[in-house]
Amino acid sequence: MSKPKLAIVLLSYNSLELVVKYLPLIKDSIPAEKDYQVIVVDNASSDAIGEYVKSEHSDVRLITLKENHGFTNGYVESLAQIDAKYYCLISSDIEVTAGFTEPAIDLLESDETIAACQPKIMSWDRRKEFEYAGAAGGYIDYLGYPFCRGRMVNVVEEDHGQYDTVQEIFWASGACLFIRADLYHEAGGLDNDFFAHMEEIDLCWRLKNMGYKIMFQPKSVVYHMGGFIIKYGSPMKVFRNHRNNLIMMLKNLPPYEGLWKIPLRFCMDLLTLLKMAADGNWNTVPAISKAHFQFVWYFPKWYSKRIEVNKLKNNPNLRGIFPKSMVWQFFAKKNKLFSQLNWKS
Image: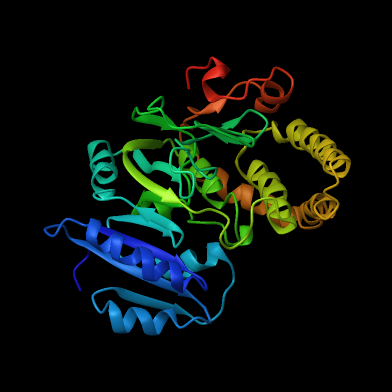
């Protein structure tokens, strides 16, 4: 089989109903003359997705994993078997629009220093709003808190075209991520210890540390259901977000910054814990403590990852790091919208 220009890799875990609905849209969106390949990765599902793909979509390549070791492992194992110039990693709960691939591929083709890009990610059920996980491109503040154009903390904006510019960002959403295959592997791919959540931010941070750009392409549009596997605000999501954020900071921060930023984040996480308790969200309170415990207990393991990441660094590209505290801006100064940061990102 010849090497395709683009491999669209749809990862599925017990989401047959979504694949039945959205796989045909992905196939229909591909220009007939393009050398693209659609691949479904069955992450050890129990809902007969493999049989469905074989019987109804014989032109789609199927990769079946025997055991489910998380979202990240689904891609780690499958992408090692896929040879292409570009990957499009796409979640099964994404509804694509016609021609969504072309603006993204054209952008990647225009500049070899662009490692990855994401489309405009809209809410599946609130069609005029951006979606929480990606919106119009991801950023991070100087203390490691991620946010998006179109989504600050829990405030999601309606799309009025206010972010319809091709823009360099800090991280691209893993819900629909276009990336150069060679750079994906050179950077080490998704970190399998993350299991799920913030793994794409960690990968993009490594690429930025290698000197590359991450971009937002508004001409490519998808709709994201969001929270299909792990619900937003669930204890498991809270745990993985807090633990993985600390691991990501340790791995990628410049020398010595982690010495004060990570302890400060522990303190800020404690404030988050107290607020959850005050709001009556008792089921999520232990999740933060568990995240801190695992970070400390396995610290040597996480630090060894930092050593490997440092070997990749080459003229780091810091574009997309907000030089202030996004949390302070949001809660203290009441700046709820990205545009209110008054920041030339």
